[in-house]
Image (cartoon, rainbow, N blue to C red):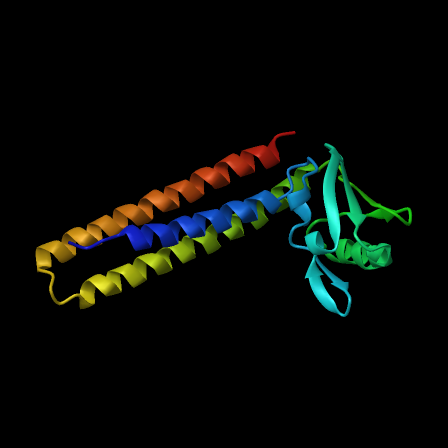
Length: 181
């Protein structure tokens, strides 16, 4: 019998990456994960923001960034401003950086949902790639009869549908959250 445990694990890792991407999408509320994709040029190389500063949500409309080294403040503010997808304008007082999270307009909400839908497609492509690899493994398995191969292919297709449905459900939840005023 064909074992789909390994394929399930691969698909679950795709779902986890997708959920992480969805956490980064703005919803109108301040959340430290919003800045997780920011790379700061510090000490002669690009480093993730969380390695050069502590990011906290002071309230629903404000992120506070406390750099570990005050000399990196300018590089951090520059990196945040450079990410046009976020549309944030940080301000610093020499010790901490405050990033006010502006209220989202209807147009900006639709733009964020559109960006998130591109992530949906990326996740589904990754799921399809796992499915294709599994199908190839079934086709080259010489010890399996045709009936077992057909059952294995159906099992793989069912698994693919299950994970595509999970992606769709996660996206629907996130897009409803983004569009909610």
